[in-house]
Image (cartoon, rainbow, N blue to C red):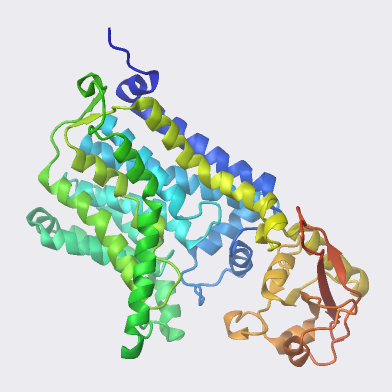
Length: 502
């Protein structure tokens, strides 16, 4: 008598239920883990909120949509980061549910579950899902674009044009990589007979009109800011260095796929006993055009995104690793064949679960162990809320006015900008990046200047003292991290620039 595990039977009978269970569990893990371990926002999230508070049409960071949504979520949660973390997980769930719909249309519901499980391990390793921003928001929009592009090209559903145009416009308002991604979609359509047939109707013109209407304010800003140009390319002498950087980015993508590769190797039939008794996940034959579609978008964004990142000296793949590797799991399933044998289901389940939990374990170890071993500061261990509250209250007590602006150390200043009053952030070293406020305006309206104190007197660094002449430092304020370890307490020097009388 053959025994089939409950998981395999669930994949066969209730594939949607399996997808929802996995996605909700993953989202719950990354929703509550930062709430428990992070005392300050990860990465550039604080800066994202500072820019979102201004509701600019565009900035040096790129299109505005992700910044607007981050600020809305932050305010909706009562100026708490829970709203932004929740928004990031909504994006993750929407990404993979849309990806499941696409995979189901190509390989059927049962194998689509396997594609989601494989791609989930890749994206969990490749890019952060907690730090909401353009790279996180671009994932569900890209997944929706792929789904509706396949409905247009592969299934000839003309009704998908309207949704496609909305998603394309929103992607252009989210990431600077959107034009390249849309060119990839157009290139695939032009390279296939069925795609060219879709483009010969009037529907693409209406879609283009919708896109232009959505993006018009941002386009106007690009023209006025003289930003509608390609970034400068590398000099000939730098091509060797840029090629090495491209190799590093491409290698990072390959490393992110290590969990997927390990699962494929463990499921191979080379050393399996009684391989014919393994449970089978069946699918109907795959359309040859669908096979081309999957392979093209599994390889194209990763290859071109890493090449562009290396060419323009960026520290990340253009478009983000989550976008570049989204189709990797589906590509493996399509290449496997109509019958997928699950030869070692228990081992596969264990390795897959370990691949998903491993990033969470790394975060926990970094928070609690790294300060004791290396003595290096963990950015998310800084008490951002306490910092913001102290300097906001101190300014209000001294001047009898709410804090309107903060400057100095960019990281600390961005924390203070998350205070309940939401003061403006001034990047005084690069004031052109915060066009809503200048150093002269800051000196007029008043604010707080913060820096990392190197002595007990709180002497400001020379560059800050030069930009704010006559600065009178206050007694430095010490803050405790979540785990100090071998590090001294965080000592912050600060000074108040009093508002000028009208």
